Length: 230
Image (cartoon, rainbow, N blue to C red):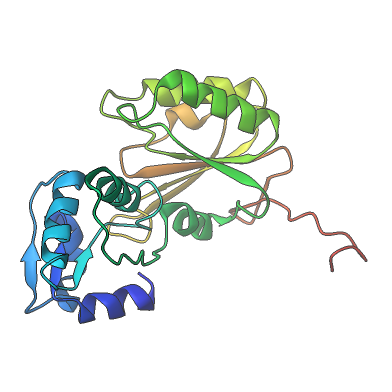
């Protein structure tokens, strides 16, 4: 969490989120009105707006950064659909891509694309097109949600798609539970990644044509040249 997120949690009156999320911030929200449970994002938005319209300061909590594959966009969509206007501030957090990259070294040292393989969110046809475009343009590729509700099929197809554009020796970093309990870091190659331990809490970072491994770290060169940009 960023210091601003901690400060905000300490100031608000009402905190809403899944129990697992709220457990992570328990020491900052003691004595506040806490609303938890397995609510849909829309239901959380509905309750937050209801409280806010009564003059309460409300925080809706998620893991990582709320604006990246998380609750912020759904919250704004709800406001638009319902025609509601309330003051909203998105408090940045550290997304798992940044956390995982730091544990791996510097795999995101140059341009990169972030793609989610979540199988209940975006049609595979659209994901494959994005993967092909990113791979052809030689972006480092970050893969969120490698194991979906329906299993590993999308990950298998994503790897095959990337292998059409990348060497099998391309470095790949796998980080599970980044910065959390049971954190695990694996470094492998695109050709060997299928045999690695990957679950729903994992994220993959696939290097580009210049990415290399040095001293058990994955590095993507920034590309500075003497006299140009130094």
